[in-house]
Amino acid sequence: MTGRIAAIAIVVCAAVAGIAMYYLQVYGYYTTLEPQIGYQVAAPGGGTARLDIADFEGIDSDSSPLRYRACFDVIGTLPDMVDYAEPTPLTGPSWFSCFDSETIGSDLEAGQARAVLVDGDFRYGFDHVMALYPDGRAYVWPQVNTCGEAHFDGRPLPQGCPPPSER
Image (cartoon, rainbow, N blue to C red; front, side):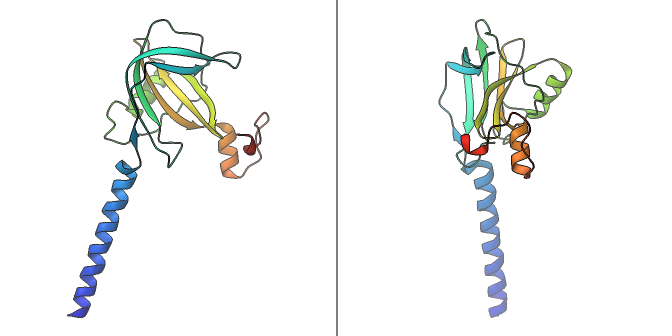
């Protein structure tokens, strides 16, 4: 009888721990961002440019630099922006329904959207990238850059990468 009680206790504890881990990974660490009316993007020459935006939805987390996602509409004229060479939208949580990484990725490959740099090295090795559609829709996600890939893999940094301690 005691063995059965111990087995049941282990199974119940494992189930509770599994549910807690799932909840924390999918929901718990995210915070919903406040609506914004402007967004800064990288401009040619190293400066920044402001986009006027509407209908902002965003999420972020302090637990990882890869959890930021934003969806919004750009209004007004577009400033000069820096194109991003190899955009790869990262999958977000399923409950953040405005961000569909598969569709965004397909549209970028087909040339139906343009990828631009929002903020290079916002945290060492990570860039914020935006997919910008002709109708004004925009989606932002974080992406590991070439310096970050080399650093995190333990390889020598490519030419032009700052040392990791600088940022």
